[in-house]
Image (cartoon, rainbow, N blue to C red):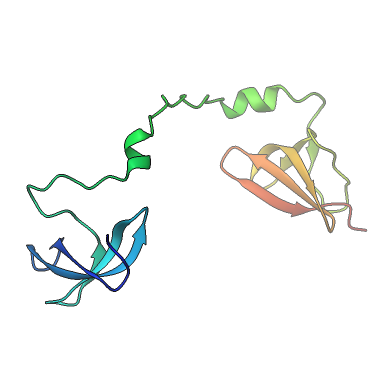
Length: 136
């Protein structure tokens, strides 16, 4: 059983050899961070070449579920779903969620969240910005 402070043989990424290492961190009874006893380099544990990786029983039982591909929606589609005319941005104007905003620097965007302290989160084509609103 491997424990922190114990020794294991591991492939050293600096020495490029399989050498004795001191274990710094263990996850699921497997070393994950080690220190080479020769060069004192600290790195992730790597199994010695030719040795099968030691897998925990939990990892061996785990089955990988297929990943779903994320749906990509164009900015123009998101902006087109908002109704109403674009309002010019001013820190004095109060905005609501889904309002369309024309900003002199960032261009056209839409409000997607209201924050505490008189701030509004607006999604523009290039970025999401946190701006003030409703200041008198």
